[in-house]
Image 1 (tube, each protein chain N blue to C red):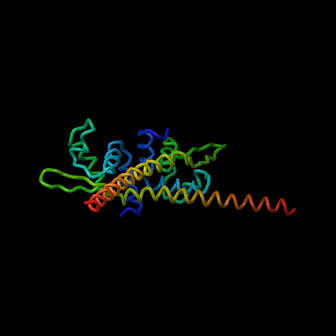
Image 2 (image 1 turned 60 degrees about the vertical axis):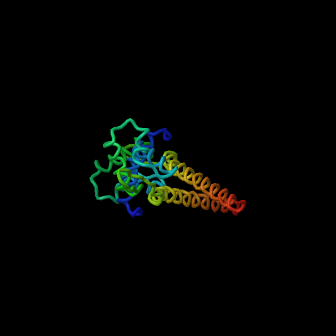
Length: 114
Length: 114
């Protein structure tokens, strides 16, 4: 899902919050239960669950419930899609500067020739 | 400004919109006037200016007015700060997988030794 504009909208929106970025950062070290994830935050569980819900709907994490315990796992694929957007922008600047370089070189060449 | 949490919040929020991402993409090819930037969008100018304002307050672009013409330029530095956040996450996973690799290797070693 992560290549279209709507998916990027929701991924960047999900990342625009320090709690949600911290959850992603924590899950980068391995899966964790909702209880473990919530622990560092001075936040009521229902508020915390809203953040988990946003991350899950966006496809940045997935979760599975066993009995009363819900365990969350990072979905690196969708995070990678957002990172790719930056790489695409950079490759555009790079080709622009390469064009400028070529132009300057050819101008210098003309100067030498004249 | 772009290294703290509040700055990342506002950068990711700014990127969570297709019009604003398209503006950044366009400015990656070089500076442009507000008129040139607005042209591809079926949007009233005041609405478009709100997007430009968000990008400018977030520090993703800067603009300068000469007479009646406002020209916008990309601020790559703040875009790079957001991209760095992804790289940091990736380096964390990488070290995690390296640790798993070392563990597996040492387990294999123990098996060979026994």
